Amino acid sequence: MSSALKKDHLRIATVNVNGLRAAYKKGMAEWLAPREVDILTLQEVRAPDAIVHQLLGEGWHILHAEAEAKGRAGVAIASRAEPVATRTHIGDDYFETAGRWVEADFRVTDAAGNPAQLTVVSAYVHSGEVDTPKQVDKFRFLDVMTTRLTELSKHSDHALVTGDLNVGHTELDIKNWKGNVKRAGFLPEERAYFDRFFGEEIGWKDVHRGLAGNVNGPYTWWSQRGQAFDNDSGWRIDYHMATPGLAAAAVSAVVDRAPSWDTRFSDHAPLVVDYQL
Image 1 (cartoon, rainbow, N blue to C red):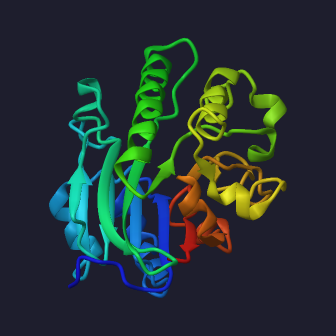
Image 2: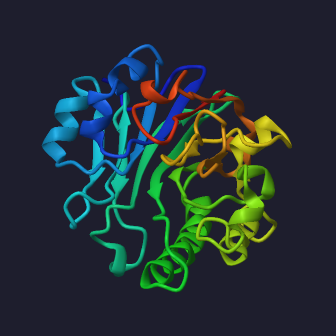
């Protein structure tokens, strides 16, 4: 298999699977098979490396960072083309075994036909909890992520961070935003990081929001409680964050929302973006 991605468009999907084994039992394979995904990024894999390879099957190059704490976190990148380099470290030894960040570099061809390097990240920012060590850890991770975004902008021609970042950036990203302003996931302090990510300081782009426009959602996660899914009372917390040149190459973004609550394979829906490269 070639190590270069040579198609005229690149399809990249991200999804928090809420446990890969459970997701496959609930139909993830049936979702993935017809989607013609080139790069698949996963969060909350929560499975040993051997199981990840077994479930995804042949035809994928798999990079997997398993969390040291069993049954927690875990992120992966599965690609049809072989990466030219991979990394599992965000830059802080504190998160070395947390299973929250992996990077893969790919050779691509830009719109002008020139060779270029694309870095893809699968990231999992945990949900946090106000006034607890979990929230302190979340802010620490976002601090390190801020530094890494700047580094990635210099490292590759194009860079993309995908995954469950567990923060709704604006009021458009949460159905019941008024009831969540003091809860982890929509705290002003958390949202300020995303102001920096997508502002002049760091200069990355929210690909999904850019394509969807100023509409409510489209949401990617729904609480298991009550009728949240049926009422589409969700949160948009799964992202494609891209450097400007790559964001400009995005042509479509789709949330693969299941047709009904009982046909979901995760509490998150996949976010699938096509890039014209």
